[in-house]
Length: 265
Image (cartoon, rainbow, N blue to C red; front, side, top):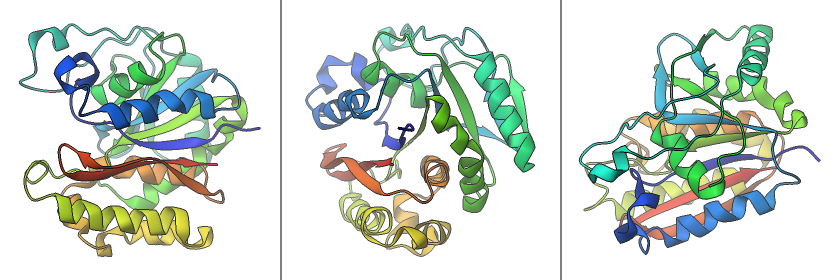
């Protein structure tokens, strides 16, 4: 059985290392911890497409065998800037990804210096705290073209038969100006659209609907900038003909926000 693909909502900042946030993140914690049990076997490697890494004009692939930490968050407690997630990188997987993108003509380069950003190491530390699975990050592209990111996912699909787990890490609602105030209604409206498109509607209509995501209810209220939505396109492309299941859903994220995560296949 091939590996499924995930699009996860990764929460805000370094929350697993903040005891005061444990109750607020209990639903997401339980959902992330359950993911390893949903897999047919332990992955040989993880390919993480993070909303927090953007590249202009193509895709960047992490080629560092020992990725450092990138603390790309602000105004959190001092100890959260000392976090370590010592998973190894995999130059071999980086080269394999580059080869797949070569085959499909997608522009790319290998970055040998990039470290783990919090879109990667935060959820991974909850799912696999042992940090014993090699991890390679893959960027999104700054022009935010949905079809381009669906094409990226299609190119990556063969990895699923090689025991590589593909995870798109973002957030199904990401409007920081409204997230703690008036975001409840737009997040619920956009989430309902996601549930319909991904889970309920015919699979054959899914990719086209995602390409037209800006016409969804409250689309630009939910994603003024779609960096946290684009990993969903990659996940969808990697499992374009397979069913989707909602594996995390809550209406109290960040106090009052509706957020979800999905498994494909």
